[in-house]
Amino acid sequence: MGRIPEDPVPWGNRQALERRLAMPPLPQELWLASSGPLPKLIRKMQPMQEQVEREGYACRDRSSDLSYARLLQCQSAARVLR
Image 1: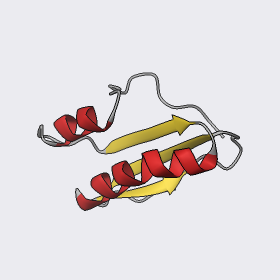
Image 2 (image 1 turned 180 degrees about the horizontal axis):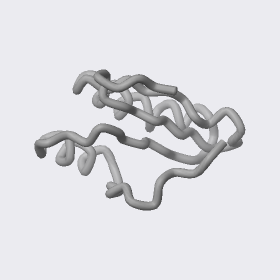
Image 3 (image 1 turned 90 degrees about the vertical axis):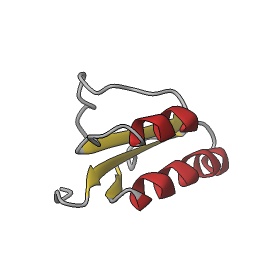
């Protein structure tokens, strides 16, 4: 499945994501991740996914081989997801 690049600048929670999205320039790519039972993952990740999509990102679920984790790769809509 590959690895998350080692050079991204991480944040810890939804408020940190909001702060980052308020600082131009926006990154070309964002990774959102969380772990836990599926209902908890959806409850935690859905608001962040909706937030980055409102900013013009398209997110692809990269967690198909993971259990108890969800990983979203979100890229600027100007770039094509592979």
